[in-house]
Length: 190
Image (cartoon, rainbow, N blue to C red; front, side, top):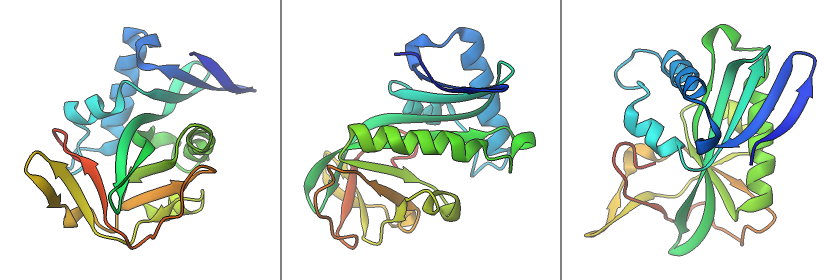
């Protein structure tokens, strides 16, 4: 699956499956994510967060062979008003703090958006940084959020307003104010 999406000057953007990384690359990505998310307990990048990011497709931007930006797309089934949608869920988006503002996150998320539009019915992510994603075509979901559990739907109101979607050519007509739900998982459910 390894594919160099962009190579120019000193930049290289690769698309890889989790199993294609070397142990050193995984360590570099984990170090990048830890630095980017910081040490505020509410924002720490945890082992559970990493588990959510693996198993899909990773986008890694390198400068002279050093990883500076990462994002991952994993497949999830998101329901909108009870309708299941095959969704490309974006996880673990980060740029090395010393590289912020250079456009590297935009390069990676542009490729992620193209990938999601080509392969999924919907794109989705959770973030408090709306402006960055909205300028790339992502839209804040206005409806109530729920988690599907063995005991039924459980409201996840704390996530409302921080869930963004990206429509694709195969997205059916959706009401942005309809209920949206995901399957329960350990750690951050969204």
